[in-house]
Amino acid sequence: MAASSAIASSSTAFINKKNVGLSAFSSQSSFSVQTARKRISKKIVSVMTPQQTERKPATTGSVKTGMTMTEKILAKASDKPDVSPGDNVWVNVDVLMTHDVCGPGSIGIFKKEFGQNAKVWDREKLVIIPDHYIFTTDERANRNVDILRDFCNEQNIKYFYDIKDLGNFRQMKETKRVITIQANPDYKGVCHVALAQEGHCRPGEVLLGTDSHTCTAGAFGQFATGIGNTDAGFVLGTGKILLKVPPTLRFVMDGEMPDYLLAKDLILQIIGEISVAGATYKAMEFVGTTVESLTMEERMTLCNMVVEAGGKNGVIPADKTTYDYLEGRTSVPYEPVYSDEGARYLKEYRFDVSKLEPLVAKPHSPDNRALARECKDVKIDRVYIGSCTGGKTEDFMAAAKVFLASGKKVKVPTFLVPATQKVWMDVYSLPVPGSGGKTCSQIFEEAGCDTPASPSCGACLGGPKDTYARMNEAQASCWCFI
Image 1 (cartoon, rainbow, N blue to C red):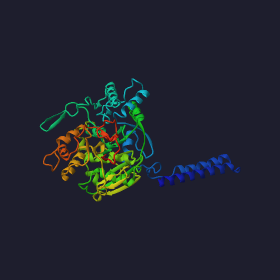
Image 2: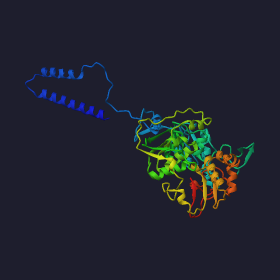
Image 3: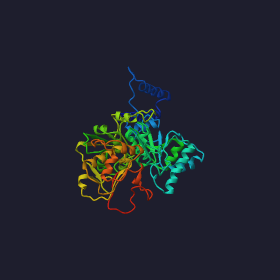
C-alpha cells in the first residue's frame, strides 16, 4: 500500500508540473502557437513512450490481502472476489431456521410484505423446529405450533419437525437395546442440536436462525448467526440478507485437555477474559491443537456461547472430525474454506489449556468467572442439566460420570432435560464408560435425580408456568448447565 501511495503521489506531482509547463507556454507572447505545440508534443512523446525492454507487472491499484474464514464465506455468498470488515454485502442464504417462538412472527411479516399467497424462496432451505414451549397446556404456546404446522402444509416445507402428541411422548418400544419413539417420530427438540444431528450444518455455508444461539453451527466451519423476525420475513421471500462483514478475533488454544475440563470451561475462560461485550459484532475464530482434539458436540458448545461475549458468529475450521460427523447425515455437497495465512485479525488471544481449571459463571453475568473450587461452599437450591449448551449426549455422559465417581445422592432437586429425541434415547440406551454397563438414566435414578424430561428447551427461556423445572417462586440460587 505504501508503494502504491508513493506512485500515486509521484504521478500527481508530474501532472502538476506538466500543467505548469502548459500555462507557461501559453503566457509567453514571444512564442508562436505552432512552436508551443511542437515543444509540448515533443515533451509528451518523450514521457509517454519511454524505451522498455520488458513489460513489468503493474504496481498500482489495490493490494489483495488474505481473508479470514468468515470473510471468505461471506465473499462467496455475496458473489464477490473479496470483502473486508465493515463492508455491507447482500448475502445468499443457504439455510434459514425458525422455531415456535419466532416463527409465527416471521411468517406474519412475510405474508404482510410479500402477500398472503406468496411462496417462500426455497422450500428445501427452510428448516422449522418446534422446541421452546412444547410440553405445556398453555393455549397460546400450543397455537404457535399450530401456526407453524399450517404454514408448512401451505408451503409444502420439506423440513418441518412436527410434534403431534404432547401427552404421549414417552411411549417407547425397546427391541434388542434399540429404543424407538412411537408417538412422535418426527419431533426432534432443541433446534441448535437438531440442526446438526439432521445434517443441516455444512462447512462453507451461511445458516441463519431466529435465535441468538444459532451461532452454535459455526462449529461446522460455516457462518451462522441469529437474526430477528423482520430479517427472517425478508429472507423467507428473497433468500437474501444484508450483512455487515465483521472483523475477526482469533483464539488459539493449545495444550492437552485435562480429563476434568469441558469445552464449557474453555468458553467461560474466554468470556471472563474479554467480557460479555468483548466480541460485540465480531467473529470469533477458534483454532489450535486443543480445538482440533474436541469432538463435534464440544465444538458446538464452544461456538454456542460466542453470543454471550457479544459475538456475531463463532467458527472452527472443518477437519476430519467434521467430515466424519457429517457422513451419512447429509447428501448436499459442501465446500469448506479456511483462513489465509495473511488474514487480518483484529486481535489474537492465546491459551495454554493444560493449565486451566474447571470454571463457573456466577450470577448475574457469564463473564463473572470463578474457579469451581472457590465456590464449594456456595449454597444452591436446584440443579438443571440441559439446554442447547449443556443438553447434548456428551454433557449427560459427563454428568453421569461425576455421579458415578461420587457414589452419593443429590441433596437438591436435580432436573434433566435432554436437548433432542436422539439425546433422550442415548440417555436411556448408551452405557457409561466404567459403569459396568449402566446407562445415564440408571445412574441418575440411583443418584436420586428427576426422571429425564421430554426433550425441549425446557426452563431455559422460562416459558409458561407449567414448563418443566421452571422456577415460579424466588429462590436463593439456581445452578444451571446452560
